[in-house]
Length: 243
Image 1 (cartoon, rainbow, N blue to C red):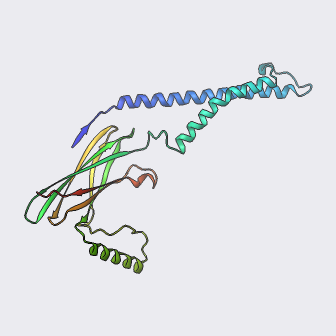
Image 2 (image 1 turned 120 degrees about the vertical axis):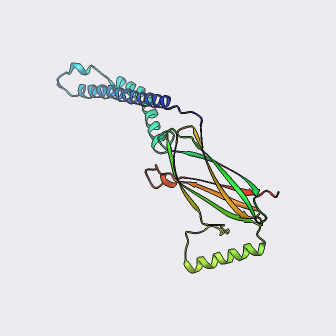
Image 3 (image 1 turned 90 degrees about the horizontal axis):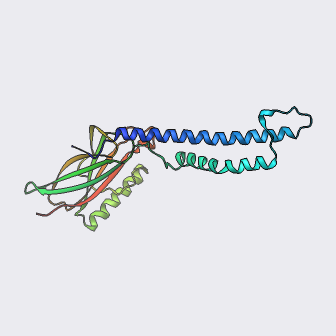
């Protein structure tokens, strides 16, 4: 199901074009200012050489002219460098990077004397300036309650023993009992900027279960590096209704 808030493709392209044009003009202005500084400095340097032929196109400059040119050139240069650092280091202008915001909600109902149904809804909101494909989605559910103190201590001991035997340091999360293996689903979905898509998933659990934790992971299939491909992860603790 799709609930588009706005498309805004033409407006986005116009805004991006204006930003590129503005940055190009700003870069040209900074380069022009420093060209003037260079010319004044060259003129001053050549004027200090005895019997050096005069180059009329350079004009005449003294020390005060060179320092004044450097003074006026410094503020736009600092702004230009700060813009580049912000773009490359701090991601202040990450318009080309995909980003999703995910909200999870759940509801439950009794479907038999032995089972409850849990329906989960994920609202996926594209808060970036580029379209984001949604392809690989992983749903998981773990039981949180009911567990007694003895049950938790027993699981903790089994977990510590298994890690000591296998020397496996990658799996460092407490082993809450999963109802089933993670469900990996493949979708063919493209979430446009400022658009919201809805994903749903259904779990059927024994009625003895009181609380579960539901996890959702959306892979970033458009990421260019291993860091970008980490994707987006959300989880929800849910208390099952007793009706």
